Image (tube, rainbow, N blue to C red; front, side, top):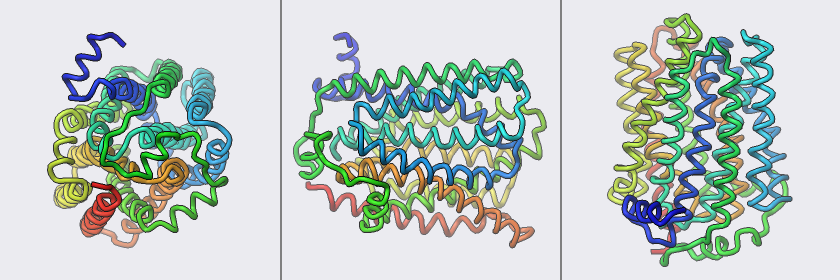
Length: 429
């Protein structure tokens, strides 16, 4: 890293010189991780419109998560943090190469390919992002998380924006295999950034949680209980983690409701598959522009000004208003606007705020319990939410499900206030 780069980063983000290497490589790592995901995400959404029964895809994803979680926990028990990242990321790269070959063999993807690809991308996204944030919550203290996570998340948004702009101008009729191979390259670049981050010294600020600091000083020497059962026990014995789980599940219910309504409207009103893929890609880059505005200019001052509890209630309140709007005026443009707004606040504000919740957790909670929450429980939320949404539409004919999501948003916001307060109590002033 050049001296000019260091000076620019210090001036732009207002950090100490000792923090710049960590921040720089964290920023670039997340850039490549989300660039990889957003290269394949529009394909997933397009294939979802071809398959049709999205709730079955969510169920299949949840089952895969249940099968994958023990493997992930076994890997955590046997390898160091430095080895975990290349093993996990290159495992997904092998799948990408296989999908690229299949895309050449089947220019018009069959039903089975569309379904498998949807499930795989959903699993891929959660694991690569979960590993990233688990490492960061281990390397950064609570105070540093509040200070830096917004800027680091902006790196991911820039990567997602770059990928979305690329895919929105890519004609899928020529075949998606080039995009799949590009994703392999992006994952290799992410591995390199993770390696450089691991070589950078860890720094902490005074006045943070002693347990977190003690474990972060020697992260690979802190033993974790083996097996996935310990992850379940850790989650269900901790009121704090259970609060995070409840907050996550309520949020998934609201987000999945918006997503399923969007998929249904697109399927009904847009017939061309290539046009659908470009439409979803355009939505992605609009989301990333909005997310960047938050991450580079609003996330940090908002979290510091209104503090974490109120920050966690912003999205639920906004979605309650959005659901009222869509219930009153149910149009394709309206549902796209709601989806864009929901995702901007989720990535730009809620994501960094939720990761701060884990900076006061033990290392066991950061890796194994957080991994369980962000993968299997996350996809369980998708599945349960999809079935609840379908049940509401079936049993409440003639009524827009958005009306029923408004009180769910209120409960979600109240829970956000509660767990934000719990996080503050865990942090030593």
